[in-house]
Image 1 (spheres, rainbow, N blue to C red):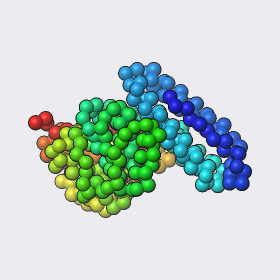
Image 2: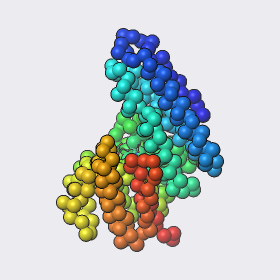
Image 3: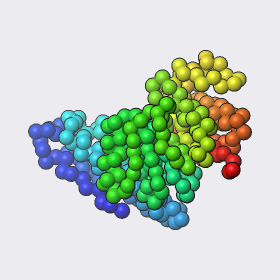
Image 4: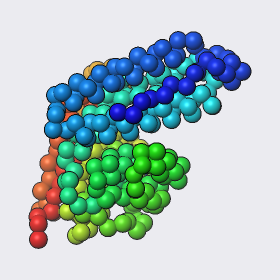
Length: 293
Ligand SMILES: C[S@@+](CC[C@H](N)C(=O)[O-])C[C@H]1O[C@@H](n2cnc3c(N)ncnc32)[C@H](O)[C@@H]1O
């Protein structure tokens, strides 16, 4: 696995005057625990060693970039940064399991479109697998970062800036979306609806997200009112709450929303199931397929 280079965070005292001296040491300990996690997972899942290495490489690259960015811009003591850091112990662990579990459900044959791809994590990992993959993302900054990561990893990838609701989409055999969400828009529902009409896209794998931002855009599901939708969307944001009881209620709301999505797909005579990924905060995955022609 590619090494993670920790720049000397204490070398520039003018820009980083208030940086705690032990930041380097703490980053090193995060990296050590990450590397142990990767090695442990490789021992437990020998058939997935290639995939685990790829996820590790991508997350390390992102973590290193975050660290350099923080060194250039931030003036905080390092406390906040270490909590938010892409490879901070909790965040990394969650991302690691989410991505690995998602990859298991994405067919290894055929091309894949990653919708609302952000910096293209899934599209990049599929390209690392050797698959043709596309990403579409509305935010140009995220698109630039995705292309940068792909270049650093030496892979060819097609990440485009675009709107997945009504813009043109590249044709692909399968669709994937990880944590799609947007202000005033029920993004997973828009993806599900568009996929159901797109004959060329066979499988959909969508890891959903809390839906507080989508509370005012009810997708008109049968047997549910706009008020009920709003309440569930708000409650789904509690998955981030520190209080375990609120977290539980957050999960309950996400499950109720995702079950509605499954019923919608089943009502169209499409195969659809809901998988739950352990060790994650937002690990509900909707897996849907169209019958082969
Ligand atoms: C929570 S992020 C998830 C990003 C990425 N899939 C991941 O898991 O890291 C949601 C992403 O959806 C993007 N997005 C929101 N509305 C969109 C739209 N209409 N078309 C394309 N992308 C959109 C946002 O810019 C953001 O990057």
